[in-house]
Length: 107
Image (cartoon, rainbow, N blue to C red):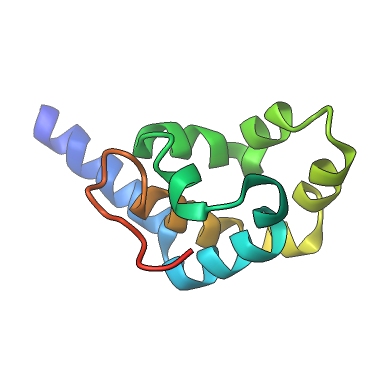
């Protein structure tokens, strides 16, 4: 029974990443977040894959909560660019999370 649940969860996660691009996520990070957070690789490595999933769930709800007192960040998180690239950014942060074993070649 556990295997069935695990497989169903894996398939559901993969569906949310369909068409997501790590490269596009990194590029979106550079345009939206780098000014304040600097290195994308270091930021991505500051959380686990499951933590990044929580941050990006519900259209970035937790990201927006964390940045709620920063009007510049909120403008970016509520922008069309973020909305368009959230699945790519999610893939970027997931790929380079602290428990992924991956390190980006360039920041």
